[in-house]
Amino acid sequence: MAIKVFINGRPEDAEAPTTLPELLASVKIRPEVATLAVNKVIVRRDDIDGVALDDGDEVEIMLHLAGGSE
Amino acid sequence: MSDRVRITHALLEQLHAQANADAPLETCGILAGTDGEVSALYPVRNAAASATYYSIDPAEQFATYTTIRESGAEVIGVYHSHPASPARPSATDIADAHDPEALYLIISLLGEPTVRAWRIAEGVTDEVTIEPTEG
Image 1 (cartoon, rainbow over the protein chains, first blue to last red):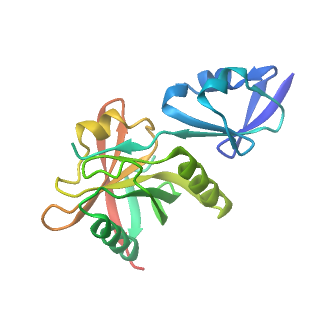
Image 2 (image 1 turned 90 degrees about the vertical axis):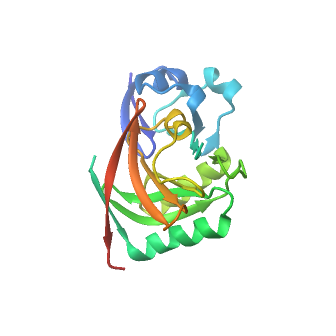
Image 3 (image 1 turned 180 degrees about the vertical axis):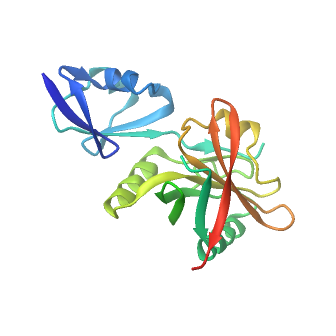
């Protein structure tokens, strides 16, 4: 069944059942370099594998921001 | 993605002021706008509190992203300062850059304060020309 999820505010088509790891793989993002939120709640790293996505879910993928002068 | 970015003189001055205020530590923040234009700066805390490194706390990053989206703008990149080195990406900046679409803006306080903008993808840096505008 086709569902629509919102990734960083933009609608994307997905095929249910879809999990958060599958969604990340589809956009080629490694979970270890991102903080993730689903429906405005941050998902703990240890919980990512168990998150299933439903139609209309809002997923925020925030790539880690860091760096430095040395 | 644009190879140029417009930013007002007022925002450039704001960047210099923030970098100077936080020196000798590195300062940092989130850039809002559209591809090709910075419309607002969102200063955030340097969770590393370091003179040579910055990191943004994920919860503060999430809150800032939410604020930007609710304002109707887009998150377009990140900025940070190099208090004692040039405004070009260091090896650390390159290694820690995970978003090839993001604009990485660096403020240097070495000598005459300067701001330069970059994209960083797969270890390769490309400078983005800054076009200062009135305002």
